[in-house]
Image (tube, rainbow, N blue to C red; front, side, top):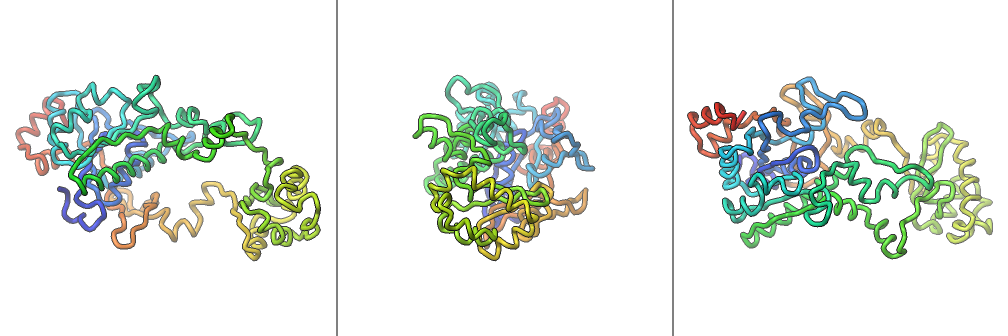
Length: 411
C-alpha cells in the first residue's frame, strides 16, 4: 500500500492511520514508523496534536529552533501529517477513505469520544473489514473510571507505583519522564503487531484494547503478586534496613552512589568481603548466612556505609570489577547521555535534520540484524502532507482540495 522504497524495512507496506495525541499513542506509532510503517497522523487543523504546544518540561523550555518541542519531534518522527477536521462530515469522509486504504487505525482519546465522532471500531470496520483498530485508554473500557481522563502522573498514583517506590516514611514519589505513557506505548505497539500477524495468517482484522492502568499493573508484576499472596501492601524498604544488604545502594567518598545487585548473596559473600578489604566479616557469625545477614541487617549496613565512604565511586567500581561482582553506578541523566555504552549501541543516536542539521535523538531500541529500523524523516509540521495524501493516495482533485480548504475541512 505505501511507499515501495520502504519495502525493505520490516513493516514496509503497512499503512497506519494515527489519530493519537500527547505521548502514549504517538510513542506506539513512532515504534511502528521507525520499523517502516507509513504512519499518517490525523490532526485537528486548529493546532493539531496537543503535544505541539508542550513547550516546557521540569521548568525548562524545550522548543527546537524550528518551533516544535523536542518531545514531539522524537515521538512523531517518520510520520506524515494530515490536518483534517473530523467534527465536519466531509472531514469524516476523508478519514473513512483513508481507512479504506490503511491496515491499522490507532486512537487514544477518552472512552466515548470516538463513538461520538463516529470514529469508533463499529463505524470504521464497515469501510475496511480487515482493519486493525487499536485503542489506548487510561483505566480500561469498563468500570466506573472508564470515561475518566488520565495522564501519566494519575496512572502512577492509581497503579500503586507512587507508594511502591521510595523508602518507608517518604511521601509518595512520582517518577518523572512519562514512564507509564512510554511503557503503554510499547504495549499498544505489541498488540498491534500481534493483530497484524493474526491477520496475515487468517485475513481477519480485530480491535486491540490497551489501558495504561493495566499496563502499569503488569509492569509491577512482582509487587502486585506479593500483595495478592500476602493480602497486604508490599512494604517500602528502608535502605538502612534492607533485608539483603548485598542488594542495596551505598554512598561513596565523592558523594556518588553505587548499587549492589547480588540476589544470590551467599555465592558472592566471600569475594565481596575480600573486595572490601574486610575479610574478618566472612566468618562473623552475625553475617554468616543470608538469614543471619537479614536478622542483623542494620549492623551490617552501618559497617558497609563506613567502608564505602573510604573510596570514590570509580575506585570501588575498579575494585569490584576485578572480583566480577554485580554492581552499577547510580547515574544522573547527564551521565547516561555521556555514556560510551549508550552511544556505541545506538540507544542514543544522531539524525541529520533537514532544518536543524545534526541533532541527537533517542535511538531505536529493537535491533534487527537484516532489516533494522531507521530514522528517515523528522516530525511533520502541522498539515505538511495534507495535499499529497488527498490527491496522490485518496484520489481527490485539486478542485476538491481547494473546496475542503475553503470550508475549513482541512488546513
